[in-house]
Image (cartoon, rainbow, N blue to C red; front, top):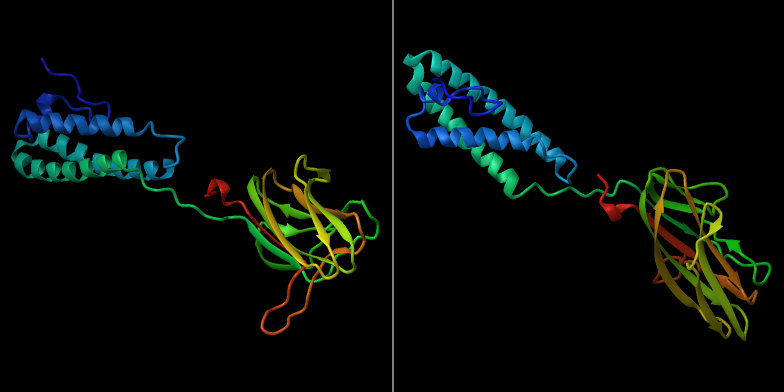
Length: 264
């Protein structure tokens, strides 16, 4: 009685395999290889799905050659030895490829697909104490998918993702006494809870540099604004011209990138 097919993909019995494989160990290895490749087809929804699909396609191509060789050898015994050698060589190469994929999936490639760098070269002041005012930008250094809108305080993104907003600003006080500077974020016109910072400045020409960053989970066409208020109108976000040996000092610098999740 003929034995059952050894694999749904191979569709050959052990008796047919014995026509061109020399011993039971080779037959068993051949069966295990086809079983492994059958299992390979269920690899989905993982970080290396693309690589697995590519490997599976390569495996399928090699398997097609193996099946053709096996069937031809089973039918034409005169070519059995030559076809067996070809099949075993393909078997060895394919086994190594499949084992390599299972043991060490190819590393995922990380790309910063959306980013932007913006700054402003003007001194920004408040006209009323304790009143929210948006910080504006008048220069774009580079960008891809992140851009300044209208008004120029709005920083838009065109792709969903987790974005890192990293900002730095130059503060100054133009008169004596003490003043407070408050800074926070707005998302689509709404203040972001628990996002504010406070800096107290004392004395005339008391320049202070400060920076911070914040993560946002954004949808396409969301926008972020950087807001500030002061308790004294002599507190300002100051810009300074270039003076040897240093270049100009923007009042605000902002960089944005969605590399948190390693977007492909």
